[in-house]
Length: 299
Image (cartoon, rainbow, N blue to C red):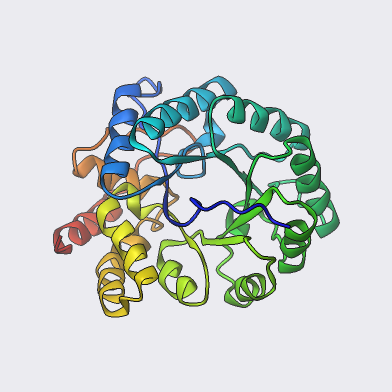
């Protein structure tokens, strides 16, 4: 039976990592951003995911970011789901163990990218990880647009049935039929999170348990409130917030994420707009669009 994780519900933020001009991590800024999240109503923190540019950080840097997140989360009573995935199974096992030792409450593990495993390979990858970190909660992360491979509903459900510490999935496939199949067939206690801001409200209506958000980096209070209203059954209020936030939700992906998000955060005075290559700052055309959207937001 899937392990019951009571705290794993609601709005989680896929945290952006602030860098200085020299490429180093801005620790003071990062801690401030994490505090802002929790004070804005977000209780689930996801460092070292796609939005955090983890693919360009070495292991020591990722562990450092996880430790900083844990430090703030413990003080402010939030939980940490650390990104520990890669396309090397043994490396994922090793790093997931280190994240657990660093104080993370769970791991977010992206589907293996580049290798393009079969569904049987996908199952074996996650099964080996689950067996190697018994008792530590794992959230699958399905994002075919990034990985060039999809975790099918059948594979997700099979993993959920076979391994009690595979407790959730972050679904960013955009495939509503697949996600509904997972929600309908999941074992008791297995959680389904939207991996796309714009899909959160409809998926919660269909039975999903939360959102892993990019938009919450910019507007944590409003994004978390939208999710809360959805769970409270306040549909009119939730829809109003959804449509107010929708232009920003969509604009965050005009160019490769987290480029647009970091530009908006820079405009808000939250961080410097520094990304690590091969990502670069957004174009002037995108800047103009984002400024227009920011100005139109009525919060």
